[in-house]
Image 1 (cartoon, rainbow, N blue to C red):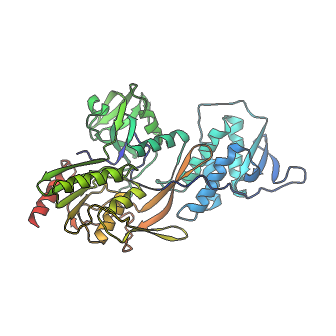
Image 2 (cartoon, helix red, strand yellow):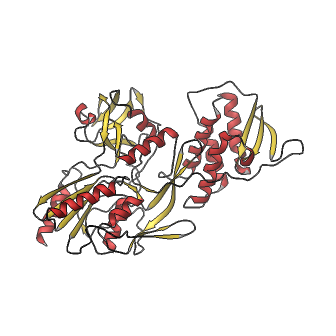
Image 3 (cartoon, rainbow, N blue to C red):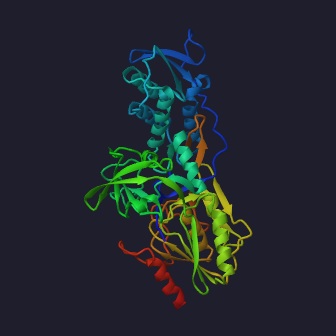
Amino acid sequence: MKRFTLLLVLALVAAACVAPAASTTAPPATTAATTTTTAPPQTTTTVIAGLQVDLVSCTGAPAEFDALCNAYQIISSHYVDPVSDETLAEGAAKGVAEADHEDSIPEPDRLTCALPTPDFDVFCDALAEHQRTDPEPVPELIESAISGMMESLGDPNSVYFTPEALSRFEEETTGQIEGIGALVRAEDPSKPEDGVCQEISDTCLMTIVSPLEGSPAEAAGIKSGDVIIAVDGESIKGWLVDEVVAAVRGPKGTKVTLTIDRSGETLQITITRDEIKIPVVTHRMIEPGIGYVELSIFSTTAPPQFRAALEDLLAQGAETIIFDLQFNPGGSLNAAIQITSEFLDEGLVLRTQSRTETNEYRVVPGGVATNPDIAVYVLVNRGSASASEVVTGALQDAGRATAIGEHTFGKNTVQQQFDLSNGGALKLTIARWVTPSGHDYGHVGLTPDILIEIPGDAEPDYLLNKALEIIKQQ
């Protein structure tokens, strides 16, 4: 049984909990820049870095600025905490200033720049300066600006997906992709209170948790604990996690060479990519009366697979269900609600608290394992995060399951996907959630009913074997 936090072949960040995608984009911001008597309405013409620039409001901006204006409006309206226009504008400016795309264009004679609010004059300054020194296509610089705004939030769970990255993310939710089949986590060991990181550095490491069984990575000799330091000979230091994902993934039959640090030894391993099917749910009867089901990620395909696994175990006579959520990083909030509902007749699954309101998510009737005579034990560890904690917390609060293992990860934020006009999307933190009883365990994690310390060198079945001992004693 493979334990993992996130797939190298995916665009997910560890510990994700994603709400349903928003239906199209928010309307563009409409704040106007200062006008003059000679320029068109809502337009100011000025000179920045020696370049003539027309400053316009979002309502009058060229279409290539729509994604920036959409992103500003979405963040301002939906991010879980208030964020100032000044912060977002400075983030956009920083993103443009640090942009380094491969495409280049001739230096423009004149430039138009959109101002979502007057504070974005610093963004336009950065855009003009960049076009004078290293001119690049405006749509690419807009993507850099959006990334900069998201980074200014200081929230590793809120990210901008380029159109290409969004395609990879959507492939992940189907449970089938092409790549190497390695399971990784990107964490900063110097920040044990959080650990999630986005930019690879001396402290933010992309570490192999394990290769998938039968995968190209396993066949090539990739091992748990390997740290990726380069892809096809290029160091990944300074890359975002998503950039590493893009470089490693690729069409079936193509090759990629990973430079690996294995306990101080540097190795180069070439892997031939192939089609990878993500093992979302695995199950089996461990012994008469005891069924085991492991859920690796809360993908959109997980609920029907999980239900089918439960039905099969119950048909084989399972009176006890061991539900393994170790190293499950989360995923779809809807999937978490549906899977929780397989064990509960009624009640709440969770409450979410956004900037403006509190919402309740109730059990979906019709679960197949709601009979209280069916004993349920949930296995968790420090890698059980987000949607995993939604399920565990709800079952604990309802007295429906006994949680066994370590304190969980402690991520109680919910992300929602907002599509943008350029084909990309924002994955934005929109709320914090608490258990039905109101327990907020952000950063500290859930406390299992039976706390068991798992050694760092423990075998994959360590906690399962401990749970079996406990179950047989009861």
